[in-house]
Image 1 (cartoon, rainbow, N blue to C red):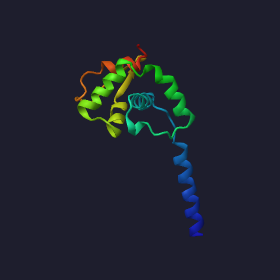
Image 2: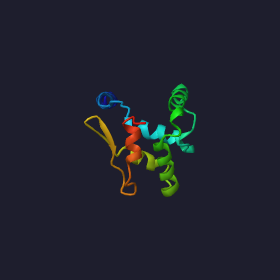
Image 3: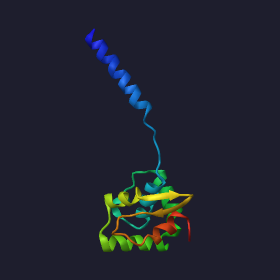
Length: 122
């Protein structure tokens, strides 16, 4: 009887917690990971995404010389950003009234390059 009660309790807890999970795709995380890949960051060039990776590479290949990519490469050269720093910047990019701008760590004062990429400017 005790085992049945524990099993029912675990089932209820599992179903309750599963109902609260909402999968999402963050545009800012996608932006920064694609930008990192386009800028040549090796830790973002692992081919684990299959067709998605191939499609994003083809789509963004014409933008390899975009000022934002160059700016991003400069940030890496000056400050050594990689791995977690990229995602830290990603979660600090905020969308307001449809315009995206970067609110990054004080180390990265000039966010004009990120603005260009985020709003689709050429």
